[in-house]
Length: 502
Ligand code: ADP
Image (cartoon, rainbow, N blue to C red; front, side, top):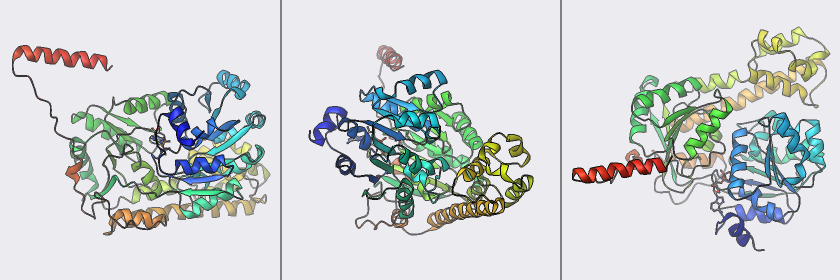
């Protein structure tokens, strides 16, 4: 059947979005495919639709629980029942049931940690996997902004599964990162489908706030005036909480904070309330976003300076998915780069910590990540954060690292230094972008080695003259009834409607 007919039959859409048809055709012709499509362009459909044409199962590797949850729901919304997510969210009883019945599912979502469990990979090996999908594939590359050590083993897992037909999906990857994805997955021949990173309906607006302490009052003004819904991103959980309370105090009631410190149920609840229009504003950390499939987000504000252009684009890309005008505002005050610098350094162990660790165990035990796993008091004595400890464990786990302790220590230090350089370079680049007097869109396109757009979009960026008040909430056109009797009916009507909408 023609692809358009399948699209309409199973998903109810008449036309493909940019890049979808090319990706799907490439896969159905049996080609491994790496696709870089902008956020919100419907990347999921690129593996959802082939599910109707391919015999075996579709295995999707996805980095975040919330993202997986959303993708499962998306498929269920289209009436697909044979879908399951294998992640730490499943209790052991449910996991046992799912693993015992894997052949019954068509779409299997799995977290990379789960693939590391031998009994799970064994179950997956027994299936007929017709498509191996790596979602958010930039997580594979250590040059990528969101490198996940778990992701770097996907090539190995893919091999264990018999090198099935593969689709790598990402929205933001420089050429270097794309090269890494291909190498890491072990793809020899493949098709590349790349569409522009640009989202013309999102305007860029950098606002220079003279002093960091002026930001709260400016934020309140902005949130009061802007068309909602919107997301405000913070680099700190605490500030996200504080600002959510402050906004609520100032009369913006439908606001909540969302960050990794909340438990899973709370997070899912807040996400759902936002998606279903019961909340107008989310004060979030980067924990919020991937997979938030809400079409009408009108603004994204960055209260703190992001750590890199890629994550910034991902975050602002959550707005304007309906194609309507939206705005991405970044509040910058002098010295703001200090916070991302500190965060970047804090994510990695220091040389001093590495020296200390190796001095404690100058011989073989250290080379075993299981040993580190069971030695949390060592982590605490050395003052390692969870992230730092995980990085060391993952590094040591890699079969390619030297076995000699001195050389191992040295290569760990080199790895850490490289990561810090990558992170600092990104922050410097972003600062240059903030301070620049050139078109912000052109600079971003240049970063991704894309050509500048010849015809300027109408609402491009602050440098090109975007006016903020264009993005204000429209005055309500409501007219109120003139006499008392009519008022009663009017109020009753409002009450009735609000009951219905609950
Ligand atoms: P992303 O590229 O960010 O992963 P998603 O796959 O989550 O985007 O899709 C974004 C939205 O676009 C979803 O609501 C999806 O149902 C919708 N969508 C996908 N393909 C089409 C299409 N061809 N026509 C209209 N809407 C589509």
